[in-house]
Length: 310
Image 1 (cartoon, helix red, strand yellow):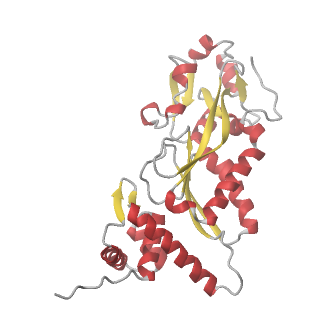
Image 2: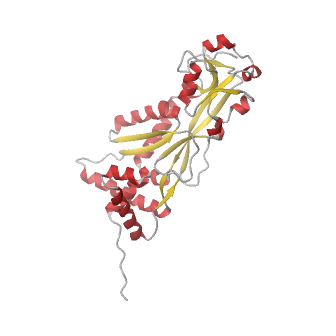
Image 3: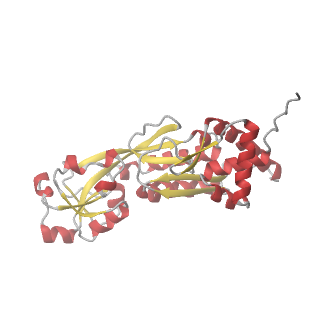
């Protein structure tokens, strides 16, 4: 009986897989490539038949690559880079294309944004998509190249890189202190109300700080967004446990109990296996590290503002 020779994967199939791996969704990949959802699905099915196994598995946040899919995606990156060089009039800048990252609100605004702006001066074909969220790094998450998280991640897939640290301090507005008095001790601070994260929705163990530093303090305003913490504290809603590099930008915030209430937390970047080989991803990680180093004094609460309170 004659045997059927398997059909090798095509470049189109590999490029479709690469876009699905980067976006995590067939619909998003279809829009990016100018295809229909059905065409994307057919290309993935044909690629799996050609390779003899699954290249994608459905995760909680979209489609993620299998081990076979990671090998195919690496081959697809080579195809994409070769096509870019062929189409270019001059040698293509490898730091190009879209890099997708997730990170916290404050890091996105004050670290990632200036880092990307500086990179784009030398690499104008680079684009970075930033999704803001405060959560732990996932073992299987698709759709992002880089995750920046608070606290050291325990990941089996991907490479974890320490970016640096930042400090949290206790702040209040002058108007709030006039109305309620300035706490001189932790015991007095606990009798006030706190502005911080929603405890029931907090997904990062390292941010569960009030229970240690301010045991028993009750909530005033809680939010999943740290910019809400800053603005609620400025408005006089209560005492805010805030990142110093954000709070110290506002002259109408006073830091309280500096010697007693201070907590340093680390930022880590997790780069997923299928992304690490891309020069653009490596460049963004390098830019984040440079920005962390440049802002180290502000991140650690050592800015030009003198500490107020004890």
